[in-house]
Length: 377
Image (cartoon, rainbow, N blue to C red; front, side, top):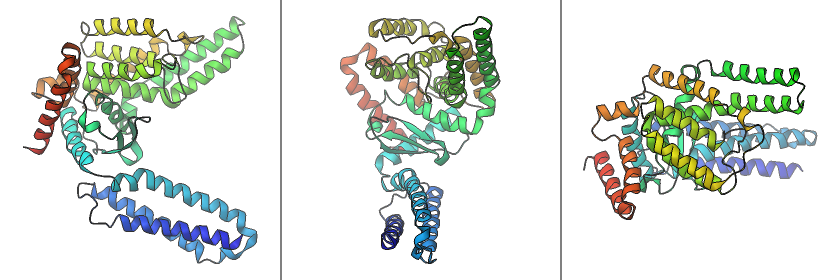
């Protein structure tokens, strides 16, 4: 057992050393954020020092400590994986697409008046995981090739919302948590007073926990994205929902995400707050046709899972919160800039609807225009 344990710790140390050497490669892009690179090197150096300290301590020669060393190996492995997946791979895969997104995100942050540190956009995601954000590291991941498309990009604003939420949660949530707690406490009391099925109590407690531990954040990011990019976000969300509808999941929720149906209601609510009261009507009509066509099953007691009153409460709070932190809404961007990225994304959906046969050519031309504007060519 002792030779085996020594061997895997030496191997672990060697792996960290190889990663450190890779980060010294002159081919590493000069566009990568210097602080991000330096912090990654620091974390790897600290991990290697901890592994080396154990290797040279003499403790690995003590058989009685074998179980402890297995636990230490797993702890080191978790640290290594986190650095590798969310730092090392971001740096070593940083290429032309990432450099392009760096310029684009800088332009977007200027257009929306966001003063936070701009995230690193990486193309290490895959089509299955789609877009995701890791606020802890200021990273947003997108699938490869997204720099060549427009219709998915409104979802980038949702992931930006996660970074904004991470720093401005207090201003965005308002009294939403109190409203959620009050709603479910009232429903639980009704179960007791009306002698209804006691299983509903655990059902309500579970949904309350989901609201507080994940759904408020996801709804907030939808609200922020709609606030920043307008109607285009609704169409992109419907495009994504089309995939889940094939799995009968339009009304389904998970611990981390509310249902697509509830999210779409939230988006429509924010559009109305932005003043798109007329524009939202045909969108809602298309949405109702979509629900009727797909015929996804509605779970029991669904009306108590995503009551519209809670969605409206959060939506109003997020709208006020976005104003409080100084974010520039989509209508405000239109008044300040000739052609913000958000307008191009809305134009993309309009072009797709009015001239689908020509959309491919139109999109390619727009992407070239954006690239030219970003590089000054």
